[in-house]
Amino acid sequence: MIVQPSLRGVMLNEDAIEKGTTSMSGSASEPGALPAAEPFDISGTKDRLAAGTGGYEVVHRSPGLEIGVYVLVSPEADRQSPHDDDEVYIVIEGSGVLEIEGENVELRQGHAVFVPAGAEHRFVGYEQLSVLVILEKWRR
Image (cartoon, rainbow, N blue to C red):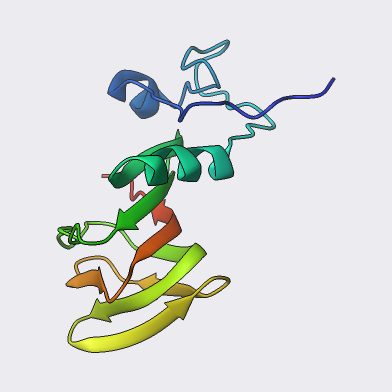
């Protein structure tokens, strides 16, 4: 059986996420069971966000993990604030600078950077920048 990537980001309700009952459709077959494979369309999501004014869209969410696509288009500023979770940014298109706690990290396609939970950070110096965002969601 071939599983095709979703054309839209996976949108799940908080109840399903807390119970660990997520799937491509957001419904569960068994409480606590996750699908063995859950493909998602990173490129399509990036293209859709870039065609507009950018933004962030979750493409996968499960207990302990969130994966999203974040597209920034100049002159729109990056207005994010510190997160409660560790995260990794992987540049999938474009280039820019990530300011982290007063330090500048130059990034371009193929680069990745780790940002610890609670760190002040934002992207600057970009025309168009697309990143894959991986957040480790701590169970609270």
